[in-house]
Image (cartoon, rainbow, N blue to C red; front, side, top):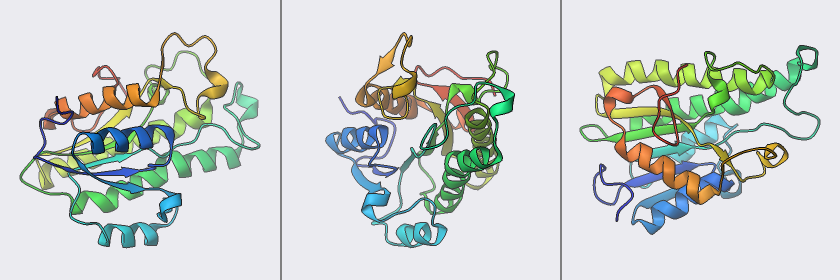
Length: 230
Protein backbone atom coordinates (compact mmCIF):
# COMPACT_ATOMS: atom_id res chain seq x y z
CA UNK A 1 0.00 0.00 0.00
CA UNK A 2 1.34 3.41 -0.95
CA UNK A 3 2.60 5.64 1.85
CA UNK A 4 1.47 8.91 0.24
CA UNK A 5 -2.07 8.50 -1.07
CA UNK A 6 -3.18 12.14 -0.85
CA UNK A 7 -0.46 13.56 -3.13
CA UNK A 8 -0.24 13.58 -6.90
CA UNK A 9 1.18 10.34 -8.36
CA UNK A 10 4.96 9.93 -8.09
CA UNK A 11 5.46 13.08 -6.03
CA UNK A 12 8.81 14.84 -5.82
CA UNK A 13 10.11 14.79 -2.23
CA UNK A 14 13.01 16.90 -0.99
CA UNK A 15 14.68 15.71 2.21
CA UNK A 16 16.94 18.26 3.91
CA UNK A 17 19.44 16.58 6.19
CA UNK A 18 19.20 13.29 4.32
CA UNK A 19 22.42 11.87 5.73
CA UNK A 20 21.08 11.79 9.31
CA UNK A 21 19.22 8.86 10.82
CA UNK A 22 15.69 10.17 10.31
CA UNK A 23 16.48 12.00 7.09
CA UNK A 24 17.87 8.86 5.51
CA UNK A 25 14.86 6.86 6.70
CA UNK A 26 12.44 9.35 5.12
CA UNK A 27 14.33 9.29 1.84
CA UNK A 28 14.61 5.50 1.71
CA UNK A 29 10.94 4.94 2.51
CA UNK A 30 9.77 7.46 -0.07
CA UNK A 31 12.05 6.09 -2.78
CA UNK A 32 10.76 2.60 -2.02
CA UNK A 33 7.24 3.97 -2.41
CA UNK A 34 7.95 5.29 -5.90
CA UNK A 35 8.51 8.96 -5.10
CA UNK A 36 11.22 10.97 -6.79
CA UNK A 37 13.55 11.93 -3.96
CA UNK A 38 16.14 14.68 -3.79
CA UNK A 39 18.56 14.36 -0.88
CA UNK A 40 20.25 17.44 0.55
CA UNK A 41 23.03 17.20 3.10
CA UNK A 42 26.51 18.54 3.65
CA UNK A 43 27.87 15.31 2.20
CA UNK A 44 25.91 15.97 -1.00
CA UNK A 45 27.26 19.51 -1.18
CA UNK A 46 24.28 21.43 0.25
CA UNK A 47 25.19 23.22 3.49
CA UNK A 48 22.14 24.41 5.49
CA UNK A 49 24.26 27.19 6.94
CA UNK A 50 24.93 28.67 3.46
CA UNK A 51 21.94 30.67 2.17
CA UNK A 52 23.59 31.27 -1.21
CA UNK A 53 24.25 27.54 -1.55
CA UNK A 54 20.60 26.83 -0.74
CA UNK A 55 19.52 29.29 -3.43
CA UNK A 56 21.77 27.55 -5.96
CA UNK A 57 20.49 24.10 -4.91
CA UNK A 58 16.89 25.25 -5.37
CA UNK A 59 17.70 26.52 -8.86
CA UNK A 60 19.22 23.12 -9.67
CA UNK A 61 16.18 21.09 -8.57
CA UNK A 62 14.70 18.79 -11.21
CA UNK A 63 11.21 20.20 -10.80
CA UNK A 64 9.42 21.76 -7.83
CA UNK A 65 9.00 19.57 -4.72
CA UNK A 66 5.54 18.43 -3.60
CA UNK A 67 6.89 17.43 -0.20
CA UNK A 68 9.74 19.00 1.77
CA UNK A 69 10.94 17.53 5.07
CA UNK A 70 13.61 19.50 6.94
CA UNK A 71 15.30 17.27 9.50
CA UNK A 72 18.32 19.29 10.63
CA UNK A 73 18.75 19.70 14.36
CA UNK A 74 21.14 19.43 17.30
CA UNK A 75 20.74 18.72 21.02
CA UNK A 76 24.27 18.17 22.27
CA UNK A 77 27.81 18.21 20.99
CA UNK A 78 31.42 18.90 21.91
CA UNK A 79 31.43 21.30 24.84
CA UNK A 80 27.68 21.59 25.32
CA UNK A 81 24.74 19.55 26.59
CA UNK A 82 21.13 20.24 27.63
CA UNK A 83 21.04 22.53 30.65
CA UNK A 84 19.78 21.15 33.97
CA UNK A 85 19.75 24.48 35.84
CA UNK A 86 19.41 28.19 35.12
CA UNK A 87 23.05 28.79 35.96
CA UNK A 88 24.18 26.52 33.13
CA UNK A 89 22.67 28.71 30.42
CA UNK A 90 25.37 30.15 28.17
CA UNK A 91 24.90 32.70 25.43
CA UNK A 92 27.07 30.79 22.97
CA UNK A 93 25.10 27.55 23.42
CA UNK A 94 21.77 29.34 23.07
CA UNK A 95 22.98 31.10 19.92
CA UNK A 96 24.29 27.86 18.42
CA UNK A 97 21.06 25.93 18.99
CA UNK A 98 18.92 28.81 17.74
CA UNK A 99 21.04 28.93 14.58
CA UNK A 100 20.85 25.20 13.82
CA UNK A 101 17.40 24.30 15.17
CA UNK A 102 15.48 27.42 14.17
CA UNK A 103 17.23 29.91 11.89
CA UNK A 104 18.55 27.43 9.35
CA UNK A 105 15.34 25.39 8.88
CA UNK A 106 13.14 28.49 8.89
CA UNK A 107 15.21 30.34 6.30
CA UNK A 108 15.42 27.23 4.12
CA UNK A 109 11.63 26.93 4.36
CA UNK A 110 11.21 30.59 3.41
CA UNK A 111 13.23 30.02 0.22
CA UNK A 112 11.42 26.80 -0.71
CA UNK A 113 7.79 27.80 -0.12
CA UNK A 114 7.49 30.05 -3.22
CA UNK A 115 8.76 27.34 -5.59
CA UNK A 116 6.38 24.60 -4.42
CA UNK A 117 3.43 23.84 -6.73
CA UNK A 118 0.03 25.47 -6.44
CA UNK A 119 -3.36 23.96 -7.10
CA UNK A 120 -2.70 20.64 -5.34
CA UNK A 121 -1.66 19.35 -1.95
CA UNK A 122 1.91 20.15 -0.98
CA UNK A 123 3.52 19.86 2.44
CA UNK A 124 6.55 21.46 4.03
CA UNK A 125 7.38 19.84 7.37
CA UNK A 126 10.12 20.52 9.90
CA UNK A 127 11.18 18.23 12.71
CA UNK A 128 10.42 19.90 16.02
CA UNK A 129 9.93 18.49 19.52
CA UNK A 130 7.30 18.24 22.22
CA UNK A 131 9.68 20.00 24.61
CA UNK A 132 9.32 23.07 22.39
CA UNK A 133 5.75 23.47 23.67
CA UNK A 134 5.63 26.31 26.21
CA UNK A 135 2.33 25.20 27.74
CA UNK A 136 3.54 21.59 28.06
CA UNK A 137 6.74 22.57 29.90
CA UNK A 138 6.35 21.28 33.47
CA UNK A 139 9.86 19.97 34.15
CA UNK A 140 12.10 22.87 33.15
CA UNK A 141 15.67 22.38 32.01
CA UNK A 142 16.96 22.00 28.45
CA UNK A 143 16.66 25.77 28.13
CA UNK A 144 18.40 26.31 24.80
CA UNK A 145 16.85 23.32 23.04
CA UNK A 146 13.34 24.19 24.26
CA UNK A 147 13.75 27.81 23.21
CA UNK A 148 15.08 26.94 19.75
CA UNK A 149 12.20 24.56 19.02
CA UNK A 150 9.59 26.97 20.43
CA UNK A 151 10.95 29.66 18.10
CA UNK A 152 10.83 27.26 15.16
CA UNK A 153 7.22 26.35 15.97
CA UNK A 154 6.26 30.04 16.04
CA UNK A 155 7.91 30.71 12.68
CA UNK A 156 6.15 27.75 11.05
CA UNK A 157 2.85 29.00 12.46
CA UNK A 158 3.52 32.51 11.17
CA UNK A 159 4.57 31.31 7.71
CA UNK A 160 1.48 29.10 7.50
CA UNK A 161 -0.82 32.08 8.04
CA UNK A 162 0.67 33.89 5.04
CA UNK A 163 0.80 30.78 2.86
CA UNK A 164 -2.89 30.11 3.48
CA UNK A 165 -3.52 33.24 1.42
CA UNK A 166 -0.81 32.65 -1.19
CA UNK A 167 -1.23 28.88 -1.69
CA UNK A 168 -4.38 27.59 0.07
CA UNK A 169 -3.66 23.90 -0.54
CA UNK A 170 -0.17 24.11 0.90
CA UNK A 171 0.36 22.72 4.42
CA UNK A 172 3.14 23.62 6.84
CA UNK A 173 3.75 21.33 9.80
CA UNK A 174 6.05 21.10 12.80
CA UNK A 175 6.37 17.42 13.71
CA UNK A 176 7.37 15.66 16.93
CA UNK A 177 8.93 12.30 16.00
CA UNK A 178 9.00 10.73 19.45
CA UNK A 179 12.27 9.46 20.88
CA UNK A 180 14.23 7.95 18.01
CA UNK A 181 17.29 5.72 18.32
CA UNK A 182 19.81 8.10 16.78
CA UNK A 183 23.05 9.73 17.89
CA UNK A 184 21.06 12.77 19.04
CA UNK A 185 19.02 10.83 21.61
CA UNK A 186 21.65 8.25 22.59
CA UNK A 187 22.72 9.90 25.88
CA UNK A 188 19.11 10.37 26.97
CA UNK A 189 17.46 7.03 26.21
CA UNK A 190 17.54 5.60 29.72
CA UNK A 191 14.02 5.31 31.09
CA UNK A 192 12.36 6.03 27.73
CA UNK A 193 9.25 3.85 27.48
CA UNK A 194 8.99 3.88 23.68
CA UNK A 195 12.13 4.09 21.57
CA UNK A 196 11.57 4.11 17.80
CA UNK A 197 13.94 3.08 15.07
CA UNK A 198 14.38 5.83 12.45
CA UNK A 199 12.28 3.81 10.00
CA UNK A 200 9.43 3.41 12.50
CA UNK A 201 9.36 7.12 13.32
CA UNK A 202 9.62 8.16 9.67
CA UNK A 203 6.78 5.83 8.72
CA UNK A 204 4.58 7.26 11.49
CA UNK A 205 5.31 10.83 10.43
CA UNK A 206 4.70 10.11 6.75
CA UNK A 207 1.29 8.83 7.78
CA UNK A 208 0.67 12.12 9.61
CA UNK A 209 1.79 14.07 6.54
CA UNK A 210 -0.44 12.04 4.24
CA UNK A 211 -3.48 12.60 6.47
CA UNK A 212 -2.82 16.32 6.96
CA UNK A 213 -5.26 18.91 5.64
CA UNK A 214 -4.93 22.69 5.12
CA UNK A 215 -6.94 23.22 8.31
CA UNK A 216 -3.94 21.79 10.23
CA UNK A 217 -1.36 24.03 8.60
CA UNK A 218 0.89 25.70 11.15
CA UNK A 219 0.32 23.16 13.91
CA UNK A 220 2.76 21.15 16.02
CA UNK A 221 1.69 17.49 15.66
CA UNK A 222 3.18 14.35 17.16
CA UNK A 223 3.89 10.99 15.55
CA UNK A 224 0.42 9.76 16.54
CA UNK A 225 -1.30 12.61 14.74
CA UNK A 226 -2.16 14.42 17.99
CA UNK A 227 -1.90 18.21 18.12
CA UNK A 228 0.54 19.48 20.76
CA UNK A 229 -0.43 22.91 22.12
CA UNK A 230 2.17 25.63 21.65
